[in-house]
Image (tube, rainbow, N blue to C red; front, side, top):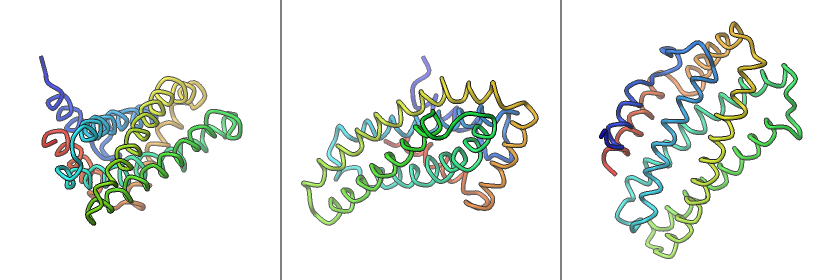
Length: 202
């Protein structure tokens, strides 16, 4: 049976920057990115079961990935492109699924800041900070896994129903522009490389 590392490697090889996407739907691209994010969540889960001092480099890589790919690349594309498109097609922001996703994005950022602060404490010699690191990490894992499920099974299906095919294609082009302007050439591939390294080395 194909092991987890091989599956993760295959996923990463099949994904590329928005400019080289293999789909015509913005929601399909975002769902593909969820699979990459999930591979790093699996690594973080493993790291919460062993001393953090033994995995400082991996923790740093994981936080770099979360901040750069999961948030700056993925979540911002949702917030600046997909969610406004949903609102324009009658899906409410306040009191609806879009508003809930936005709240969860902010909750995730708060937990990531908590992980980063705890990791800095461990590096400074405060071993007691490990408890805060693991608590924030486990809360983040729970939040993101549930968040991804809600988007894949509810929000993206809703988007596919209300956003026509030609507009979905245009959203993909806007994603590409976002990555080029906000992240720079090669940044997407850099984060895919980090995900691959974590899946294989941790």
